[in-house]
Image (tube, rainbow, N blue to C red; front, side, top):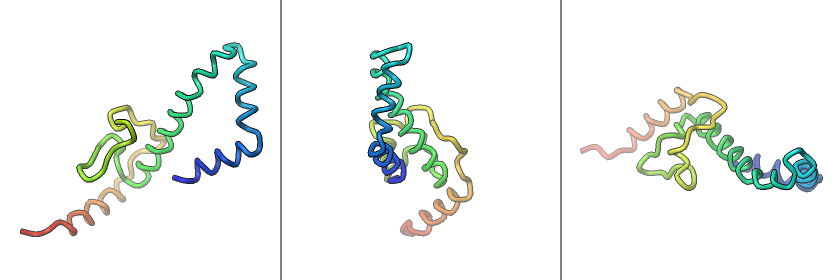
Length: 104
């Protein structure tokens, strides 16, 4: 989860943020393109989050009772995952949950 943030911080220290803003302002959409940046970066964040969840075997569209979904109800949004949900990890996770449940 820290890798995307660290990559952003590294890029920011190297001047990438300034170049992105300058390129957007000089593009055909002009200054109004800056209004799209928050939505684009939020979409990129959700894509990273959904991809990591899928890699761990957790379906990003399902909200388990013991865990919240993506911040602000993102689990009700379509998944932006770049890979399918891993079936093996989910089976292993499910088996661990079933073992930890109290037996009656």
